[in-house]
Length: 293
Image (cartoon, rainbow, N blue to C red; front, side, top):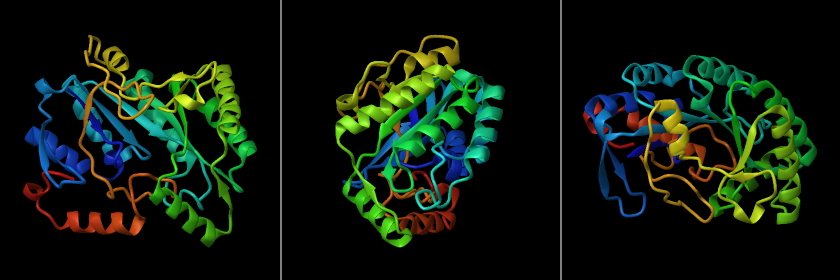
């Protein structure tokens, strides 16, 4: 089984100690956010084909990556770098810090280990299409050679996403919009062309309605990439999370409302305050009580 850690939260940034505890124990439990039922998930080396980590701040997790490397465990890291203004990303490290993290880690663990995510693309009065073209071009030039793929997608405007963007827009005085598909495709075409020109492979995450030439579907949980990192085949059947998803089957071990980056477009957190409270409660638990996030 491939373990995803996690598209529900940033485990490397905020839960590195928990992951290390659970990895040492050889298992964790995952709580269903709807039924509250828990599922036992093995993290034992012999039961895991590879790990896929998702993050925006890697430094707290580097000891764990070294530990995985030392035992020969395969892993891939999806690192999101968007470089948006603080009005949209109030608590992230600077993009300069992020690219230094990726560059240093990619040189240590290998470029096939890292995937750059420029998503979600969000159009606002402070991040218009011209901002994305210039911003993306700058990041692509710096990251070329450190990574070989960039995954793109537009923001999915869920109810809580809309609520958080509106709250930030009212507070900071910007406007935002969810453009028509034609405008999205045009911008994605420009970004894909920039990526290709710098030597990066541009892919699109689970938005087949925005498919264009030069932008193939992404496989975020990618058994082939894990195979390259591991040096031997990782076999996993395709199991879509939503329409257009080509991910390999995996088990996500994260929990919603446990990331405190505070990005206004996030689909996994109701509010930053709720996430901060959850982390405070967790900090008072013993390791034996922290079986699940």
